[in-house]
Length: 376
Image 1 (cartoon, helix red, strand yellow):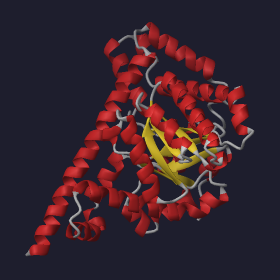
Image 2 (image 1 turned 90 degrees about the horizontal axis):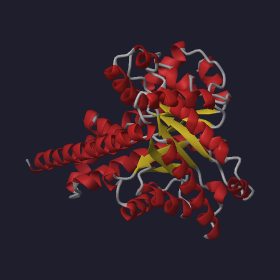
Image 3 (image 1 turned 135 degrees about the horizontal axis):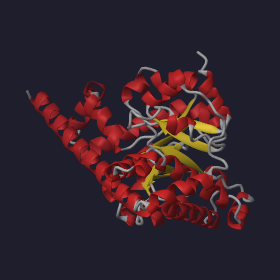
């Protein structure tokens, strides 16, 4: 089955389409393989909320493994680790041919460190190494949040030769710091004798949540000027981030690294599902087309693009001046980009942490139920 033209156009324009979802049914039914063939899907991202929805929402898909883990006396944390790493390992195997064909760039599957470690540098480093070893696939990406405490962890983990997906980026200043942490990691990796060409990284810049936060503030102002800026902040931030990225690729520091076969840390547009029905449901995909980026999207968004998306070419390059004007106007109204980003980071960390806690609680109950059933 051939992919819709709009998806092949996006792919040909240099955007890697990744699916922001994974569950065991996708693996066992062949759905993931089908999406690779029919929807140009070139990678998968996961997060604590996605795994929580998968494991608690599809209990039957995990029932046999839950029973085995319960019989072995495994606790909730061990069970969640086993189930999530199994799913990611299996997805990596599905993507292995694409990983090979792309020279190791695509065909990637992400798994995140425990979100409760977002403010603990050393624990993040330790668990990132553990997850890399447990999944034991060259096409896995270990997700580390771009908190202040996460930055040195990113550098250290990359310096070990481990490929990293830096997640929960909201601000331009933090994105610049992520790029620095990534290049520092590559420099240390070279010093430690690692081959930089095998180290792949993406930087996940969250998009739609910015509009949600800013538009709420604009609505509270209730002025015509505020209304005219609704839905512009997220695209402006992403386009400014693209400018930061392309400037970095022009730096002497990057020139030195690329001369030693280092790979760019591709910007990844995350949180691309449109939350406000007033806006087109394809906007965070079709309005963020640029050569050499990744767009990870929920299946609903992917299908919307496939069904009624209209490809308009590169919609990012050369837009930075206009994007800067958007934030200048927002600042004039008292809406400051660093403040918005700080609030979003705090909320994002807290949300993923709660999803993880809820998942552990649910799996703990499933293990108890399985043990009770086996003793009857």
